[in-house]
Length: 120
Image (tube, rainbow, N blue to C red; front, side, top):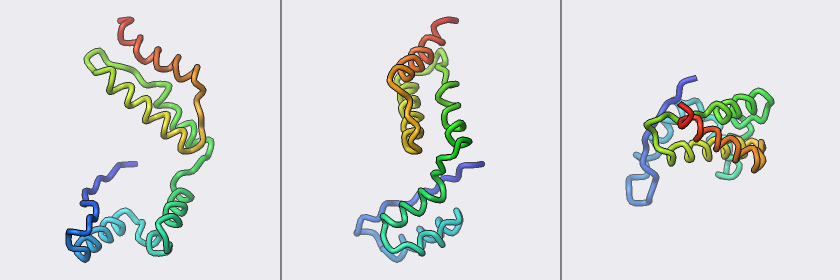
């Protein structure tokens, strides 16, 4: 699966709404979400619909999200702050699908990530 990036300014009330709307719809069509967006009447309902479609909590998804956490390694010339940020992001991704890593496992994983670079 490839990640596709789109840049669009957040609508701030000052830019031309019609132009912003056309750009937003073009992006939704390209990523195949136009139908889902137009079906829902509120942003809350849309969010719930997107979660149902794309934030699956299956065993396979949990395993796929756990793997990067437990294989995360710190390279010699990279900043510790970068790895801590990556670590927190991975924990939050798991938390979003209701997979919780207890504090002790978090500490041990973080120590392992950091000490691996010093063992060489």
